[in-house]
Length: 270
Image (spheres, rainbow, N blue to C red):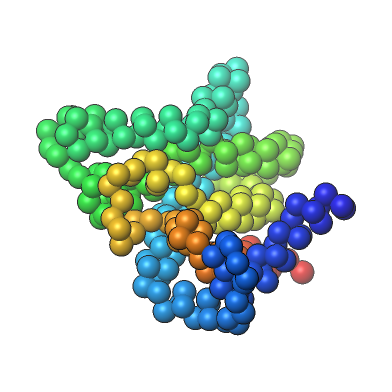
């Protein structure tokens, strides 16, 4: 309890209090009330960064959740057999790769002049220089790195479903699709809830991947920057009160999104 209070609760309360002050890191802090929040809501860059983060969340969420679940179903199936012990580490491999290494690999793949994809296509598609393409490149990297993690979560959830249940349904004439729809998916709801909420929280905290992948190609207007960039830039500029306010806005967004997901996934449980 002491460790929790020291390393989590106290910093959280301190940052909440700091968000109502103007503080540059030295000298006395000046009380400004809600002014930091008002400034942020009137700051176009905040909405750009928040929009980018929502974009990354939505468009990495769909393929990550879908492919990881399909892979978990495939590995769990009886057709895989002894190869299951081979497939599991291979699918999880992107998750344990260092972010720096993954970003460098994607730079080689998506490079404009000497990138693998452009060499194959014989074109110079600006994957890493045009904001319209840059965001999709980041989504691809996030999805690739995330599939392994959620694959393990889904595989763990599938192992809790006894084979006797699905076998009994099959004996009664249920097809594989009916088993999936009426037995597996409903029983996987708690696992989906954990995966979805974890993905939402992780997506809204992304920072390393886009910054490493895009590196020097960032626009000063931050057309592709995630929300965390706003917090980092505020801290770098000595606007600690503004950074704290931006952090608490992010907490509020994640909380609202989490409550929506809990309502959608758990709404019919009485």
